[in-house]
Length: 244
Image 1: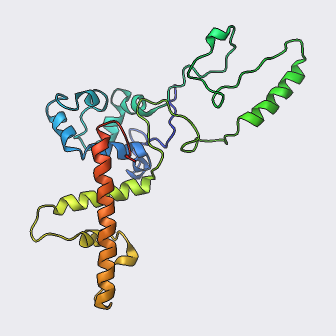
Image 2: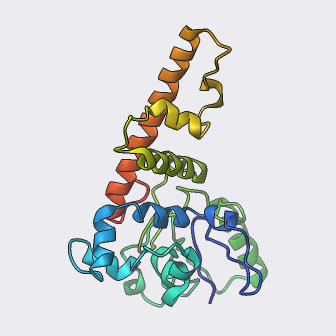
Image 3: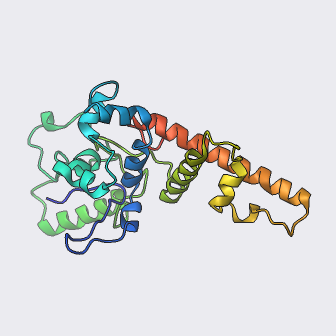
């Protein structure tokens, strides 16, 4: 049975014709996996075979040290089991008794109707269509972030874009590549190596004061991205992604 996600899920193609990595990167679940792989405490848990501080999380996410996201996602249906919605109880059905009403249902999610069976089918169908039009206002396709309440085991925060997640991780990885080296690489150079802000790139053709201002702008931007990355990496082991 197909599983339902509230966000784009990764697409891999077929066994004999794999799609480019970009199709996986379109999914926030790919970036959840990538940020988890940057948490040193979780990697140490993986090295110990799932024992230690993050043992409970390991039971769900397993070993993330392998670079193969497809293998990680598909093993024992791991990806869908972690991130897909569970809609087993939410089916169109007749309630034969008020005790069948579930406490978790709300007016925004479930519509209660009293249907007079003495009325004609034509009238009932017309009236139901009218009520459905008034109450069911969501458009076709995947629900937008925030428009549907998630009941997945691990739920995405609402304030993210895939583009920002990728850029945040790029900055973090570039920073870690130079961390501890001498001479120290300033943040603005890290930003320039990624062309983080095209309009803040320095040039020997510009006046020194302009280059100084651009270095400040680039350095500040790198610092913001690093702070965001560290917050996400810190909270991803708590089952929260991305951190708010």
